[in-house]
Amino acid sequence: MHWKGLLHRYKEYLPVNESTPLLSLNEGHTPLIPLTHLSKEWGINLYAKYEGANPTGSFKDRGMVMAVAKAKEEGSRAIICASTGNTSAAAAAYGARAGLRCIVVIPDGKIAQGKLAQAKMYGAEIFAIEGNFDEALQMVQKMSEEEDFTLVNSVNPYRLEGQKTAAFELVDALDGAPDILAIPVGNAGNISAYWKGFKEYDAVKSSGLPRIHGFQAAGAAPIVNGSVVKNPETIATAIRIGNPASWKLASSALEESGGVIDSVTDEEILESYQMLASKEGVFAEPASCSTIAGLYKQHRQGVLPNGATVVAILTGNGLKDPDIALKTVKQEPIVIPNDFDLLRQQLKGCVV
Ligand code: F0G
Image 1: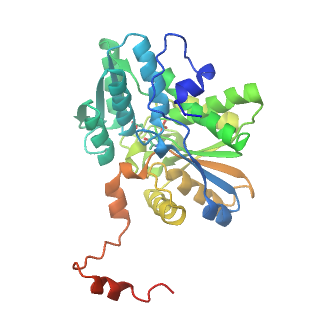
Image 2: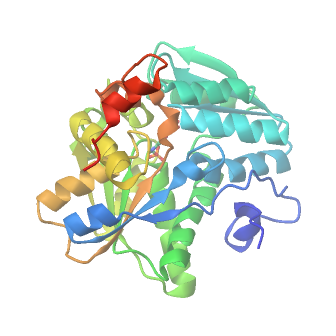
């Protein structure tokens, strides 16, 4: 069956009516990849939900397709968002698709190059502030109150509606909820959306509920610390956030699911980032790899139940942030003259 995107596939669970345009870039339906090596090492059944396979390379497409379809339905002509990069890429793409102006406000110099390239290509109007994401979010919230812009950050409830579909896909693929869901936490919308999705499917299908394990970067861990971080700092720029908008919803998800939230250092994130790519062949951006780093930490602490089914949400594609990848792997290409004998000299007999 040809996949026609989320609004088509899950319309009975979404705020879709006859006047809602079935906007789509064929988002969703992302791979659930068994991580066989890590599963063996850690004694669990570990899967990665590879959200980097979405049309703009992150999970944001799930929420954005819903939010932009509703904006269009309601007659909006322009959308606005603050972003650490991925939201701006998704807003710009779906805005272009729907014929809406798209304004994005980003922290200057703190978003990955691939994401900036996307926002530019999709034709967004980009403002880079000398401030952080939290400050940008305050600005766009005010702007959307003063002018006729539709705010498409995850404080827009349609965003979470769209993003909850990832939980549906997991349950459909695994024939029930996993035991543990590991997820990065930034502005805390996605963790809240997953929990909503699991609960809604469980109410209809008795599919069960996972424990939610959330992970923040150590330099941007307000929920873990229990207080706002004024100047968040982490290499995982996607989750460089000090005052999450959906903090309360995330706390409920953690509490109701009997879950936990923990932080991982930049060193731990980078180690897992490289390990995931080089051991499993799965390339996800640093923020996404906070899940692998967090699970690795919990494995070392002995708190992952043997044999548990665990899903790590890999929220964004590794290609989004080539600079970090190139810096992380110290080994450089070996440059040689255009001469087969020299290549042979390097490689002869080296496979044993
Ligand atoms: N992973 C990636 C790759 C992200 O881009 C984000 C958030 C998160 C995780 C955290 O999700 O905010 O719902 O808790 N990125 C936003 C953005 C803030 O602007 O692209 P969250």
